[in-house]
Length: 372
Ligand SMILES: CCNc1nc2cc3[nH]c(NC)nc3cc2c(=O)[nH]1
Ligand SMILES: [Zn+2]
Image 1 (cartoon, rainbow, N blue to C red):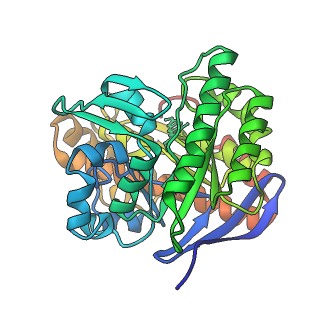
Image 2 (image 1 turned 180 degrees about the horizontal axis):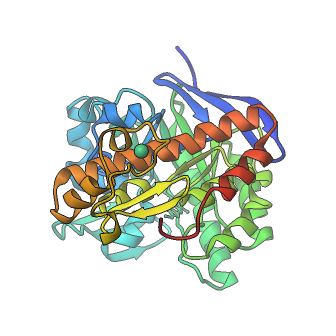
Image 3 (image 1 turned 120 degrees about the vertical axis):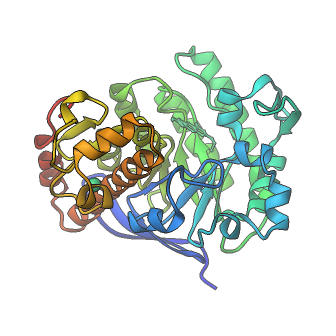
């Protein structure tokens, strides 16, 4: 049985390319993970998600524990069969979304109690409960239960929150147990403070994890501050384990993160913006609802091989968006996921060939500012 392992194939500066081996398949890194929040990547069939080049997708513990519940998914055989995706799944641990989505939250040393945003029922997530939920879901990569403080926050708040998350990381590891073929990732906290991030990294390495996430970012600090942290934080984490940056991001965020040593990322942007009529292309963003596209016979991107670009004109995509037709979200989501995976493939190839700098220069040169 394949256990969980990470092979590094090449590095170029701080950028790396490799393969994460799991019992359910390999993950080529740097990897972008489409977000399948409620057991679906919205508006996209699993086989379409695979066709865009995704090796792994993400599921959300907070949503699934509320509806249909982890116990029901377990009774039905687990999340993979339930959503018809037999490749790797990473599940988050619920804490971040409880704090951003739930009502009446109460955070204590034990964990978080909250009221469901769906039906007002009361729930509790602790490190132990989060590990149980993710086990019931059957996910291949499990995330520690942590607390992600909203920025801006003062240093004391950041320090006490990080130290709570480190205690929760130890409890997560204890509750996770020994599960060959499944991985547990720790999450570094510490805000924008290099010394607190160093303390967090050391605490996580002492506990020992199969991978390490850079947490507490993409929470409103802005790209410059995020890159400022990424200039040092990945190197504080073990080089022989995957490094995962949560919640990122726009294409240029992704490129900047890989440049600084990140191996995995996830973001709702390609799917969410696809539903709002935004298409990301190598030449910039197309807002398809704009009247200028109403008679345009060209595809979104002449050089894109996705179904939206090979089968439809901007005029058509403009029409179905304006008409509120479901195919609009389907096609733009497919295009965006395809484009994000093309960026990842381009970077994997460039790093392997030692020409990441040239690839990055070309990436930035072809992008017009703003709408095209
Ligand atoms: C795995 C659950 N824990 C956990 N999720 C996160 C999800 C994020 N999503 C974003 N921007 C969209 N930042 C994040 C930070 C964290 C974080 O620090 N921790
Ligand atoms: Zn396309």
